[in-house]
Image (cartoon, rainbow, N blue to C red):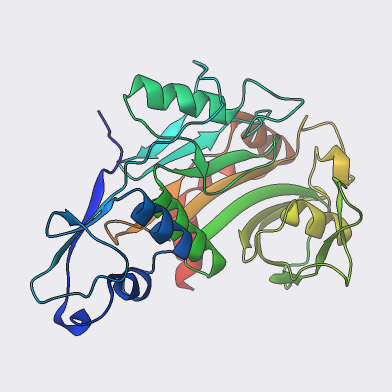
Length: 316
């Protein structure tokens, strides 16, 4: 049975002797101020087995322990529904989200969400943690989502996501022959009005970067591999639609309905450094049957959509 990570233990290096503990926590461990304050208030930071204040001066031979167990609750009802777990350990849960599933409860979707299912999974596993989404997907987009099992892992991922340390690849089937030579889409994305759902390309928007690789072009369609360099809402969908190559099935952004009943977009691959072990992780989720069927009907070779393909592209 997988359990939640209980604590972090470190031996203080000689280079930090004479410094305050909060300096070590922020500089060496790269912990957020919010995490450090909360852990200190809850008396979860100890040196040599004793609770200390953040102005504690480190000494030679000190041993640090930070408990990651915090009294938390969340108003999400557990629901026993199918969930495709791709990877799980004591720090994180990675699932291959099915299409037509909302990630988190909303006013219009109070149940049946991924978060409801994750809460049931945690309860059944005896894990006293809450739902912490590291990444999200639109309701009708399928693929990989990361959930952190404690605040330390979540804050570490948040920092990694802001740089280029978390690599996120998607596949999409679009209408039209996408230019082979176009490898980067650099177009700002803007939300036009408070509460607006659709996004548009507009100079007033945030910088938005998407790398593109054309895998195949056939019969007036293209199969694309896309890497997110920024994480704007609907980024891939907006970029492709604006350029005149909407994702098939994406009714919101002008995609034709026929081969797909939802946008043919799938979060295929993740690569990141594990926040606890430091190991480089590579996670792959095979495309869903509806995308595979649509691609085969068009005439694409969908069998080559695997981890080796992506790793080969990364090495170029």
